Image 1 (cartoon, helix red, strand yellow):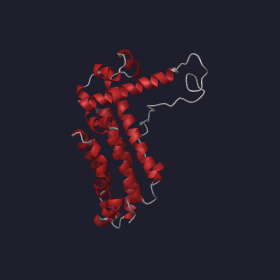
Image 2: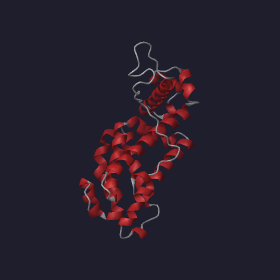
Image 3: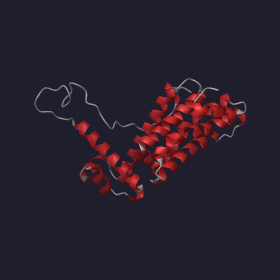
Image 4: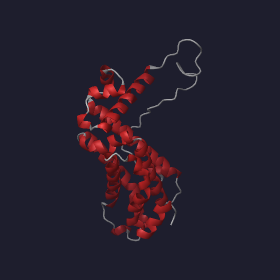
Length: 243
């Protein structure tokens, strides 16, 4: 599957959290000496990013249900009215954090798949690796998306389920490489994606997100075995090598 075909839920929007000012624009590098001003759009985006990160850090320490708006604004270092200028309530802020995490994770997966060799099994290996690397490096946001979404209400849970469902077609392509592809269970791909997410969930919950990248061979073998068979899947998983 071409990386461009790796679907992402349409409402998952990757929000820029660190905007690099362009040279020559107002209040940026390249402005003449004197008064430098940041655009209101930049300030708003920066504040929004801080609030989202504040929520993610708070729920990483506790849980979504235990976190209050007061906790979020204290962690983010913003005023309460700044929070409500960006979000109607805690749930809306959480959905933005979940969207940010899910969108960035899918962007990195698609990027890794695009850069990988064209063989499907190698692209699976690369995609899983990119997802694990993201969850390990952004454990607070990953927790919001993978762990807390299931307990943060129907809207968050629906976003999570859509993200899982969007990845399944990529794995379904493996049926073309399997001698028994037509006989494989219809829910196999959802089971594989769900299993990968569950392993990530467990590692984050027990505070071992830093171990996630070391699980790549195991999870790649798990994902490829139904299509390639145990021996061939193991060979790919051990080195990302084409069989």
